[in-house]
Amino acid sequence: MSTLNRLIVSAIVLAGTSTLMGASSQDVSPETKQQVQQVFKSLQEAYAQRNVEAVMALVDPAFSEPPHDMLKQALEAGFAEDKPAMKQWHVLGTTGHEQTLAVRVAETTQPGSGNDSPKTTNKLFVLRPHNGSFLISAMYTEADPNQFDRQAKVYTSRKGRFSLAVPAGWTPVGSDLLNSMVADSVTLMAPDLESKVMMGVVQLPLKLADDEVGTAQKGAQADVAMEKQMTLEHRVFDQGPTTVAGKGAYRVVTEFAAKETPDVKHKRMRVYVSDHPMLYFFLCDATGTEKFETLRPQFDAIVASFHLLPVEAGLNRQEALAAEQAKGAVTGRVYASQEFNCFIAAPEGWEIRTSPNPAHLVEMQYAKGKSIARLIAAKGVPADRLEQVVDKRLDTVKGIVLDFSESSRNKVTLGGTPGIESIQTYRIQEMGTFHVKEVTCVRDNTYYLILCQCIEPDDYAALEPDFDRIIQSFGFTQ
Image (cartoon, rainbow, N blue to C red):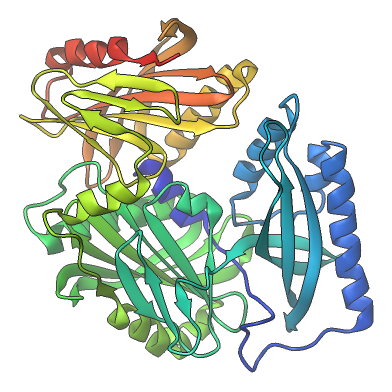
């Protein structure tokens, strides 16, 4: 939940596509097209040289999708591999709105190792003017044609089990980063290439309240609290319960400025919809607060069009979404993943299940309380960056929680592989106090994190032996 909140509150995004833009898009001059070609030529050269700084020099300091620091970290990790994947870009078309450009690009990725064939994906880059040229402001993936019915203007997600209407002139796009963290998401970009609705679904790590409205309220207010920590001139305008798709929901409207661009005000309506343990979120952003009232009817129409699709007989919604994402299977009390070459077991008194959140391979829930344990994994992380990965992750945690304290950090082994153990305490507004034991390791360029969180009023001293059993049960299949 914490990574999702950081991603949500830092995502002041821009995007668009030449093929779907509304009437407000404009053709661009031959000179501008030449400047765009130069941006991608420079990007190609920087990538070929594995030059992180040269790539970042082409990126707007307020780059938002993925967040600027995450992009740099991903580049550093990718370029550090012995045979990094290489990319090529071919510009398919460029349109503009005022000074912002929407550039449709075919991106071809050649895997650095193995026998995989090159893969080409249509991407949407947003460029903004800077010192007589352009810098990259955001990167998105075009919506899958199987998900977006252009004639009916309806976006349907099988993974997330939802559908919603897309207003005329708006463009549905995908965020690779967000979709790597939540069960599914879509961003609907307004014709101005700045305002948007970001919508997605995530599984909550714990039950926040006894009813749907209370759960949605606590989720939304926790998000607002984190947003306040990370932005400037933050104000809450109005909030209250509502109903969406027959489910209890909660709405909050805020105004703020991003720290990277303090002169630009944003007004956001967030709506959280609870279908426990799944939480569907809408972030409706107007870039330039004066646009909010104009866009409000469209924001409201998008939220009102939201529809939950039925799931397979015999499954609840969490199980159906988890089945779409599963990278392994649970047998008895043991989870094993061939894809990630690992296994882990739940002790007595803990429930174990696969998770719909993509980075979470498996999760365990303490049957007599609120506490949880999760196995998280990601590929493409060199082993020599272990300490840097741990530092970076905990820096992120510090930025979004309250009263963070790391009481110890030690070198350990995890499944026979060198790792780092960290013990922490912190608070998350509306969720309570967390006492955490986690162990991280990297093997074969794959990052593994066992995250054990004791949530008060559960007793950490009583649960620590279970946490140790979970950690000690972890191993590699080969």
